Amino acid sequence: MTPASTRFDFSRHLGSPVPPGLQDADRWKWISTFLPTQGQQTRHPRHARWIRVRGNTHAPAHREVMLTLRGDAIYSLENAFYQRTPGTVILLDHHERRDLKGALWKRDFSCLWLQLHGRNRLTYYFNHCDAQGRHRHEAPVGIVSGEPVQLLNEAWDHCVNHPEDPLGRSLLRSAVTGPLLTILGRPTPASANHMQQEIIRSIIDYIETHPAEKLSLHSLARMAGYSPHHFHRLFSAYAGRTPVAFVNAVRFRRARELLQQGFTVEAVAEAVGFASTSYFSDFFKHQSGFPPGAWRLAQIPTGPEALLTQPDRL
Image (cartoon, rainbow, N blue to C red):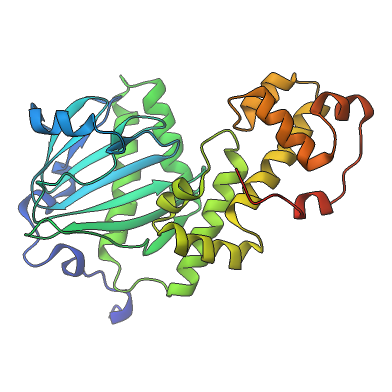
């Protein structure tokens, strides 16, 4: 007999009975910009006006997956509008513009989000909206890492490059469906402390592999699923320095590596997230005591202490 602790219980997240659109994963509707879209595209003038308001959309660097669990709502992806019903899966690739905030007219709705950080780690959380339109964003309740996430990313890459390949599309859908069903059927989440450590670790990995991206406190907190204040406290306790100081350390280290490899100051500035070469030069001089060009000519050594004494600013 299977131990009770390992049984999957889909009713915990999906209710009983499971909504018809979710009962058979083979019939889920898939929406993306790079695969044949099965979801219903629609027109919604009110939503079109709403996404033009600053702060209602964003285009993050990481990939995301959204599965609708309950309700009916509109979602915009690259200025196209789609109807979300239970069983609708939306694949959101790097830097694709999509909704950020929940529309004010959404009611009685819930969904599951996956956020992919790097090649082999993802966090997941649930979003809910009640019958009065009050939104509740749960902090991430867990993390998935290792080979399943790596396979998901590889299948995703293949479909972006070869969207006409039907076997590639099947592989991607399978790679996405597996983690979604596993999360929905898990009987109990991981401990809060373990979950928080894993999430902060995933953010650290993301910072180290994406120094050119926007890495403000607010954007990192949103990625982790926490308020900026709570994220700042958790990150500082785990990493031993503030998020801003850690980002600066990673960018400074990467800048030195690129300068030593012979890249121009302009190229290095762009590679570590600075739109202005002059701002990058000021940043580098503040870290090392020398402008980047002079530092490279002199090959001035910098010790580990240079990474531990960073200004708390971006």
